Image (cartoon, rainbow, N blue to C red):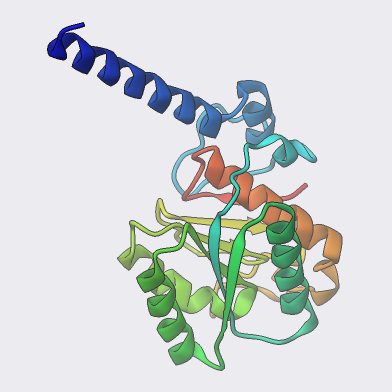
Length: 212
């Protein structure tokens, strides 16, 4: 085999590997379609309602690196944090939790998280929404996921998972009906982290996932 032929073979093998990886990330079209809830291609900032449990079929990745930022220690937020920890234990993911006492500290924690370059930065609950809405668009190379709340105008790198009673959209925008602490159950929080990761793994970012 000549050196040129060997180079062509190597390049072909690399291309095949990359295609295979991409297919693995996209996952099965039927499951992805069920997750999309009948929408062929969601528009930017769209809200989709996936079929129940469709997110369990998304491909997963071991060794995922996650930074979680929270600004509250109330039961809804701690429930979300516990769900993230449980997901991480199941999938051998690495989780770092950063807490903040106010909006200024949320900003500092986002800067810390982005500097660490994790696979994903998660915002837990309504307490981080206002600052995430301002800073996520400034870090387009970093993927963000908000659980139990949503950004009013998500950019392509920001995804959110909401459900009835957990759909806060920011100060001065949301109504009282958007926040019901009793709606944040362990089961709902577990579905939220699984659905959020599924959306990102299937390349469906910049949208809001509304759990049925």
